[in-house]
Image (cartoon, rainbow, N blue to C red; front, side, top):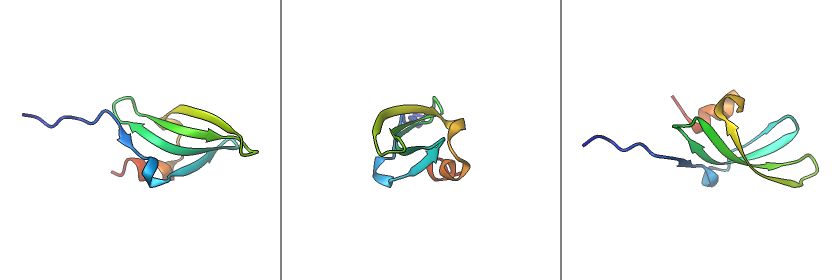
Length: 70
């Protein structure tokens, strides 16, 4: 039987953080099939915005290497 692909990869325990357009994100979950990332968004003033689903292309290159090392 073939290998079963994971639906999502849990990242909350890795404490991966990055900033895009003055909004800080903390990676929660990566979806390889959809090439997207769930991340907790926090504004400039520390105010929690909520969980956002970001396309993998919008994530900084150095963070991509941590999430999906090739």
